Image 1 (tube, helix red, strand yellow):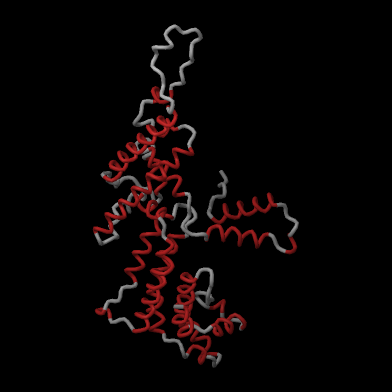
Image 2 (cartoon, helix red, strand yellow):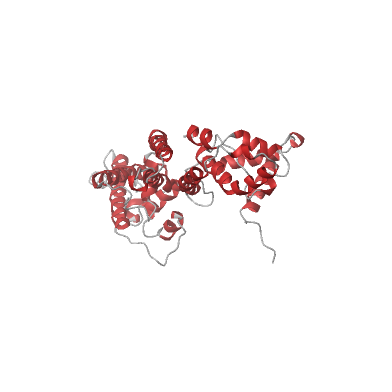
Length: 348
């Protein structure tokens, strides 16, 4: 894909010439971008979009300088077609790199959406190079993107109420298989929560009797004349209690899954595609699923946000400021993020 895009339409020498020549870059509607190895999908779009947006102005400037030969090799029609195709992928990756809301739920639907963009439609009479580009993108999606999708991604998708039906999967058998795998995965996560949670009774509060489950062990009376006829707890009472708790957990989870599957999203409830807001509202009705959702959605789909923090810290800790204390660096990064995201306190 890189060869198709960059070598055919975009020559790095053009950007180098524009950057080194004064009076060009600042007159263009968009700065001519360069290719990025860390964000290839996004950079492919930005490279061609910046060139497309600035082509007319750039042609006028170069013509006045008798340098228009530098863009003779660019096929403007083909450039527009590539920009229109890659813009869809750029929009999807925007939704995978959000920093102010969960993104894990978007990974699986993104794959199916991008696959649909790569379908070759003979009726559209796309150019051969566009069809070739679609094939290369499709191969990349199947080889790298699909192979990186895990059960946590599927569970995150299911716990997004607008994706829970998995309608993006056309094959009904495959959809049913995914539902079964997701249910099994949710049971595994629920068991992990039970084993790592101190107060098991709080998790099962909606379906169990807290008194019978959490009552303290009875004290043995000294010199009890009825000791030989009292009912004794079995020797493996702890394991039996744990087994009973696990059974209750599975029953409770199955019940909450049925309620969730039959739930219709309230049109009046706007959660801005943030599933955590939905599960916050359902915390009392579906407590176990809500707890699983909170543990899943803390995982980000992309490392871009953490990379931005490292990049920001790198601009703060320069050679001239290498003696900054780590706490000071952290405070400066937090303040910068607050400023960029409009979280700065407003003056009253």
